[in-house]
Image 1 (tube, rainbow, N blue to C red):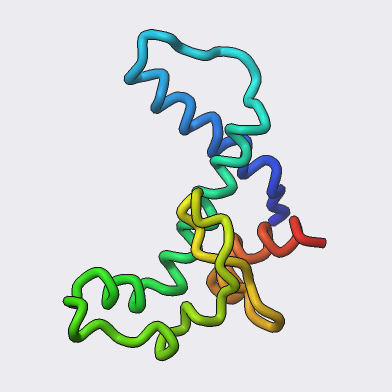
Image 2 (cartoon, helix red, strand yellow):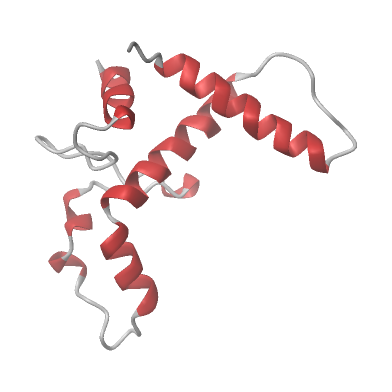
Length: 115
């Protein structure tokens, strides 16, 4: 089955808009814009990160500062940090896509974007 990255992002953006329109009086009905597509992409990147790094994220959230693992001891250190304002934890290092589950559909769509 063929998956289109742009189609995935557009459908995600439309779903987010629908949810916003349900809660707002000022509703939008025009085409999806670049900002909404970017937000949709960020949503998928965050989801992929939660799938890959769920154990580290849970461990960091549940532990106190004294028993929290050192950051260098977690898989999250494989990421180069950027895009933190959007809540995205980093970019992939060579040989490992830090955003996605290996072989998953999200992996293929996000990897295709980079090439």
